[in-house]
Image (cartoon, rainbow, N blue to C red; front, side, top):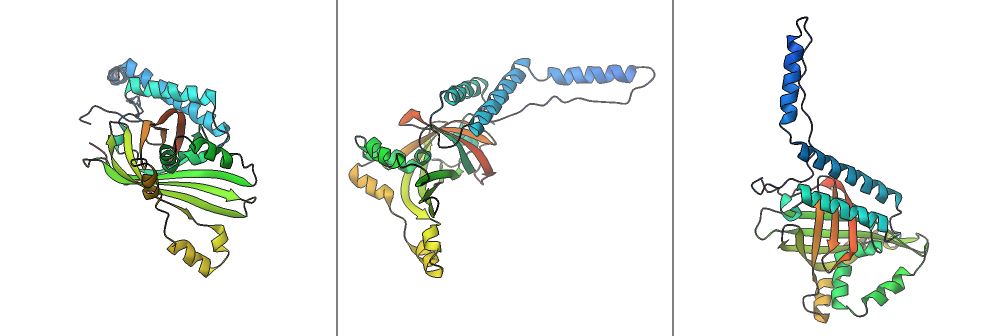
Length: 289
């Protein structure tokens, strides 16, 4: 890469082997070749790579044992900061806006707040209603299970990181179930990627929000399917703009991203809105080479 940026690179020692001979000369040659190959990789790089991978494994294990939807965990937050620092120091998982690795489908494995806050719609809503959003969110958050259950959450990102400005699409999906699971829908927010914001940020514009795949409508048979597929999405971005111009645009800050894992933050609430995602599949986004 011309930028000298490395994302999620794991180093492997290359060893050469040959059949032993009675003279021992082949063994000596093998040993020399192995030493030469090992010497090609600086010890400092090897140790940095190992520290990053170990920290990442620990963080994933913590997230997997912390029930999604349980909210803030001081232990996980500390490990997130450790990984961000290690990645920055070693140059791993950096420059997410340009690396091309953001493209793909991701599943949420940790949220520092309610799962719904992983959707950029809620970030934009908070910008439009800064004084009352917490109170409004608190009302819906207080509805106990099984009356309301949230999750899983996924994000599908498709960006062209070689374009200037960086452009693409961003789709957030959060499953919401009510009445003990009798009614479920996928709250889907669609965004436009307007540009990169530095090396690790994406400027998003919230366009629309719609409850998709409603089980209530599906129970109505073909009529329900027709309504579900043909009903237009709510222009949430346009509505928020009427309340507060500029509120529909938010910045997704990705502080670590490699082939299978990423950490994102809401630029407006860097310490409060922290999310960890695991890759489901790769996308078609172009990679800067």
